[in-house]
Length: 272
Image 1 (cartoon, helix red, strand yellow):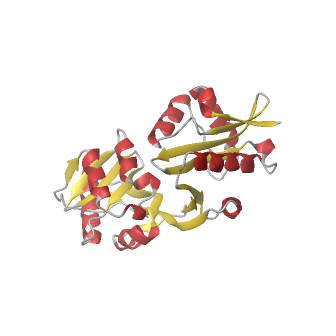
Image 2 (cartoon, helix red, strand yellow; image 1 turned 30 degrees about the vertical axis):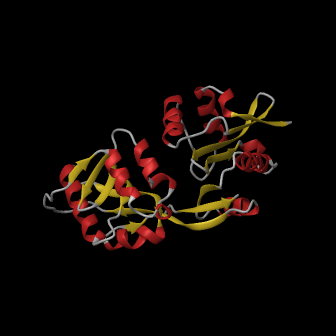
Image 3 (cartoon, rainbow, N blue to C red; image 1 turned 180 degrees about the vertical axis):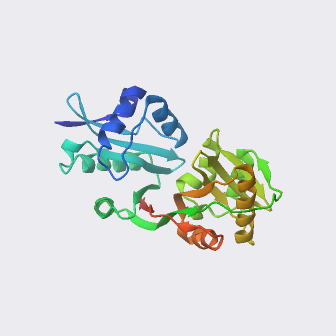
């Protein structure tokens, strides 16, 4: 019989193993070590007391991670172990998460789903979640040449202030000011004429984690930032994580020379 437990009863090693087991064979499989799981949970402001582990005796059957900020909860991760799929485990966990959120007097629950995962979207729709907008990722090839424009490296709290100047409805959970404060090294933040950006560089590319638009001449400013980053990290390509709401960022990124990446998400919301 499936029983639901809160995640506080499990060690970080057990939680990492639960992630790996339940996401086996998913659209984006997860393979976490215990330190990686700890960083993931911390970065997304996870509420372990309200996160759910479904157990069949001593066997993990499912996991639902709840992130919380104020009166908004987020289903930050949800998966069911292979042999328990299509047996109502996911529905049982989601019903519990909604019931708990109402008890806490939360105002809403949000989540993201892979845009082409029609089965998952239909599942969330049955619980009353509605699509708010698409979340896009972007890619840009290496620049062949660039000058060294003047941009300023800033602290994450300064980046958060720039993000707070924009309507918060135009940002996703992962690109918001609250997320930016949680970024850790090697993420770096920069500012140029009122536009802010957080990037993280790897051997393969430079990733935009968030961008704070200034509301004026943003295409030119984003191009200037690309040139500056090309000087800091010569010859690198650029990507933006698939977390940028299309209404606010689609046109700006595309006019700056980015193309929309294949991986897209939709943000869904349940008003309680």
